Amino acid sequence: MSKRLQDLLSSALFVCAILAGTVVAKYALYSGGSDPFERQRLEMVQNQIATSGYWGRDPVIDKKVLEAMRTVPRHKFVPTAIRSRAYNDSPLPIGHGQTISQPYIVAYMTEMLECDKDAVTLEIGTGSGYQAAVLSRIAKKVYTIEIVKALGEEAAERLKELKYKNVECRVGDGYYGWEEHGPFDAIVVTAATSHIPPPLLEQLKPGGRMAIPVGPPMHVQQLMLIVKQKDGSIIKRSVMAVRFVPFIGKAEGGKGPGQSAPTE
Image 1 (cartoon, rainbow, N blue to C red):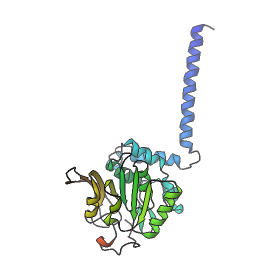
Image 2 (image 1 turned 135 degrees about the horizontal axis):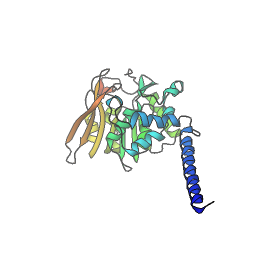
Image 3 (image 1 turned 45 degrees about the vertical axis):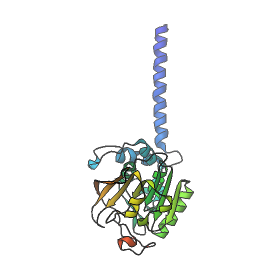
Image 4 (image 1 turned 180 degrees about the vertical axis):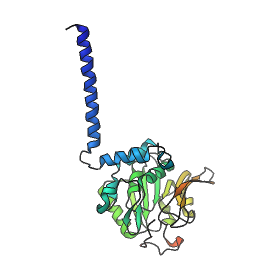
């Protein structure tokens, strides 16, 4: 066999080895390993979140957000009975009249905040803890408040079991924020308010950002981006139409902690 033929054969074998390795790696990526939901989670990010043109949505492009969405096990934040639907492109009921937001909205609102690894963030409306878990993969610290006592306690235990050590939970009326830990670099509100709570504006750090749905309950609301300028002035921008469960608490005519709200 000539040397040229030997070289060509060696090159061919090398290319085949690379291709085989790629196939194996791809299979390993989607086989799920010890996590049977891994493939669904990766497809969720690719098809629902990072791709443009789906229902006219803008794709989420922040690499930190996409990686957080790929790694946080959403199926562990929904009731066992509907776990098979955890990665569907829709909100899901989590009990007590509340929902976990659809994956795209969680990713989009997280991207709106523009958090970095040093950010201290506040979430209003812990729910099952999913949004807090996603934020925890990006920010330095996440403080989260839930008004429904049973949900808040369950979420705190879940986040502890899953080892999200930089999340601190509290049961209370989120309208008033969490003043002792402010000001915050970012605030995310996961229930629709009739207006932007003044205490949250006060607790937003100059240069900070807030994502909040504003509008009437049981109707289409506007997802708002609130930016506090360095001089303390506020810029508000409507981003998209959304439907969230209503904000509850004394300021919205509720009875305070322990009250439930109707589903969206």
